[in-house]
Amino acid sequence: MTDAEFHAEDLVEMLKAAGEPTRLHLLLLCRRCDLSVSELTWILGQSQPRISRHLKLLCDAGLLERYSEGNWVMYRHSLATGMGRLGNLIDDLIDTRSEPTISYLDRLDQIRLKRNARVQDFFSLHAGEWSEISRLQVSERQVETVLHGILGSAPVGDYLDLGTGTGRMLAILGAKASRAIGVDVNGEMLAVARQAIDRPDFRHVHVRQADIHNLPFSRESFDLITAHQVLHFLDDPDQVIREAARVLRPGGRMIVADLLPHGFEHLKTEQAHRRLGFSDAEINDWMSAAGLVPATCIKLTGRPLPVGVWSAGKPFSKQEKQT
Image 1 (cartoon, rainbow, N blue to C red):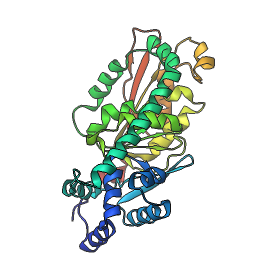
Image 2 (image 1 turned 90 degrees about the vertical axis):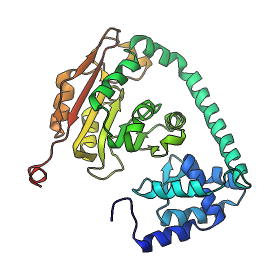
Image 3 (image 1 turned 120 degrees about the vertical axis):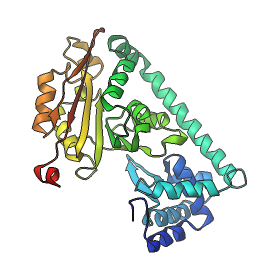
Image 4 (image 1 turned 45 degrees about the vertical axis):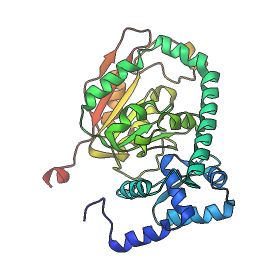
């Protein structure tokens, strides 16, 4: 049996859980984006206790996942292996042009429009700050070109983006991954990131609220981890690199894109920067201390704020090499 197949008994239980009109629609909706109980209640026009009971059955069957984000409880389709195929089958078989499905999807679009409006308000509020950074810093397109050069054209497997912010890294690398998760502690930034990945071909891409110092993932869960313009906001970037190494699989790769040393002191007070860039020695020492093997840093200059792109691999143990 492959990882994408189920035992007959397990599949029967999943189909039983899905085999009810409201639950089928919940699966359909949560495949399109992460939704709260209150949003699902409004879309389906049913009471909160009723919707919650249906959601519990779907979560117990492994078809949906439940997670907390601040004061909110959110639901999304399961990221477990094989669930995507089952979700695709349900999607293909439901007639989305008939009632009540078409009305439910119309209300979902209304929720997306409201979310987008909130995101635009957030961008407008911080436009001045980001305009200043964009003027000083090497263009993001240059950084993205370097990232693609490091990774090549091969699939990257399970991908984790630390401090995902606007979700830009997920947007440009998500297509290479079999599963992609962006984590950030800031709820407003997660709303921005959700807009960046709200597309039909990105149903394997999600964001969630989490502290990058203490990731809610087990050891050796990811094949690729990125930290893009995150470490200079931290007092203890070495701890984040150690935590990333913990959840990185042997043979996997970590990539850090951040500022090189600079003298713009005002960024500490005006932009909450904790560090004025990093040297090769600092990043490489932290990576080595975490058990990673650093590669050569690629330096992007030409603007007042130069950027470095560091990558490192996690070696296999002697036992793993022998097997």
